[in-house]
Structure formats: structure tokens, C-alpha cells
Image (cartoon, rainbow, N blue to C red; front, side):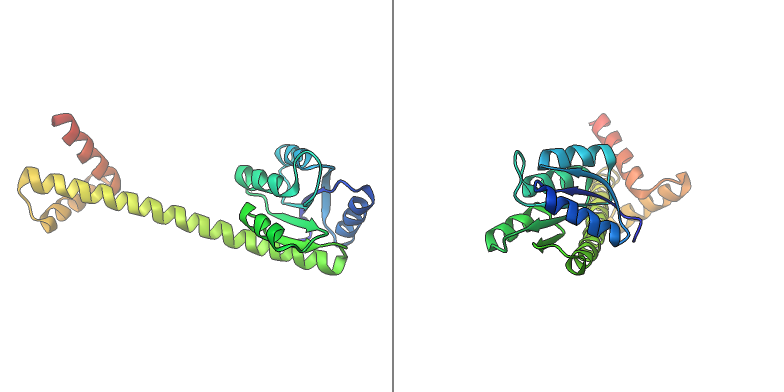
Length: 193
């Protein structure tokens, strides 16, 4: 993914210039650079990059705090760059939702794999998040259908199988989803109660 749009956040000018040069040599497009986490957040809001490469230790807002905000608001993957391999920092970065962690000095040889890992982790995270959302929605729909079946069973003295068959038949006849029909049954029951 060489057309990747990247924001770099690093408070040390020489390190920032080095990272930017390496990213460009790797074929990536650097669309913005920041000197602190707050600025990185602002750039992400304005530019919506595909990835952020960010130092962990910066003034105002540190890299971990900024990564948390960026993930929460825009779900942009962040590669943290740090001079430290401290376990606590790594745990904090992971808890903040950082998708890759890179120890300085940054080289093309370790930057390229860190970006690849971040992109793959991000893709897996997005897929899992979508699946989780889909499953939650299915569970909610199932609860609605069960509730509507219960209403039909009580009001029309039907068995569970008969109530389900009636809901399915109505759903097909009206060409609406079963969950939508269940909502209507529940709403009508509340109105008549």
C-alpha cells in the first residue's frame, strides 16, 4: 500500500526529518507533521490520514494520549515510536489501541514492517469490530422476535411454534424483515395495553 497517507508526530526535529525522509524513500506520502500529540490530533481531524507514526514522549499531549483520541474519533492506526522498551509503556500503548510499537533508532528496515503490522492489526481490528456489531444487532433482533412471539402466544393463545410461523407468514406477506414486524407487534401491544 504505497499510496498510504501518513502523519508524523515527533518533537525532535532531526528525528522527525529522518522518519519523514525514510517514509518517502519507502514510497509513502507524508501529508503532515506535528511536534506534539495535540497537533497530531488536529492534523488527523483536518487531513484524515491512513496512518500516524508518532513519538510516545512529546509535550502537551503525549503519544499514548493522542493515539487514544485518534483511535476513538477516527479509527486511524497509530505506530508508536519510542526510545524505551519499558513494559509499562508498551502495556499503556496497547491499552490505548496502538497498532504497532517501534523502538528508536528508526530505520527503513524496521519502519516498513512496523507499518505493515499496524495495517494488518488495524484491518483485523476493524473486521472484528464489524463482526461484533453485526452479532450485537442479530442478538437484539432475536430478543425482539422472542418478545413478539411471547405477545402472540399470550394474546392469541398460540404455541411458540405457531407464534413464530405466524410472524414469518406476516413478514413474508408484508415483505418486511422479521425484526421490523416484531417491533410493530411490540409497539401495537404497548399501545393497546
